Length: 413
Image (cartoon, rainbow, N blue to C red):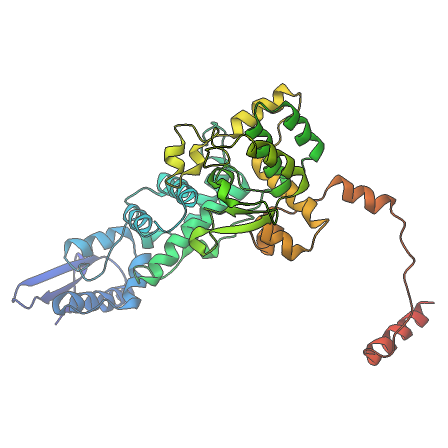
């Protein structure tokens, strides 16, 4: 049984192990109230260590907020063997080992987020010692001090929010495993993960200009598919084989590596007229070829792409050079904004349910990351004649509501 005593050096706890060995641990100079609190928790740790009992959740929560100096004392006394102490570096390593089900590009984003996390806090930082105040400091560091590849200081709000979100996911995983008891990232406003400043509507006339100047039939088709079908470049077009084309029904099966693990390995999309004649022209020369974009696939980076690392295929730089050569200023997120522009045009012509199916995402994703206002929408809103509001009241539906509405109209007049 443990006992609490005091001498001229302060408070200390004494106990005997099951083997009869006498041990002690000094709390140092503190008030009697603090000493009693330390004694209560330390006694539980002694019992858990001596008898192989599971650690008390309350004790684990207490340890997460305890001063590191006293935690070190407990560790030296061998009282933390029953409590799993995980460092941030260990947590990141374990989480990544359990995250192989994510797509390759998602894993790349996770790795990047955790690199910033480790850079700021350090690998040896105990996972449970991070507080909400620490996370606030980390957020400010991401926004104003973190170095990017382009040597600029600070990340965009959207990128910082994504990094904070992945860090929160890490903590939620270890809360489920009862390693920590709280998630400090839940108490911080992460900000929006959507960067609206980088959304650009790309008029079809620009793509038609590029298609005219394109160096090959494959490039012409790739540009047309990106702008009019909204395919994800390069993963979806580079996965297409000629077997995907249903000439009889004028449909094309679009493989979707990004959503394959979510049970959506492909989607069926109409071969829209602006795409059809480019596809037919390439088909006439496709004898003996398996993939639609056979020539563009002939690059060393396809070895990584076949393993799911589609970011290794850099078509963005080639498109940027084509734009500059044509005298067109490149826009942000070159391929992503072509996909977004395609979706906005399709939504102006077809029911949303059909468009979301063809594009390959949900309405929530579309609202958060794709929606934008076209110049044609603005011009229509300004110039189109508006019909006068109809004040007719249909008393057959919700008569009480219409009565209140009618009285409101009378009072207004």
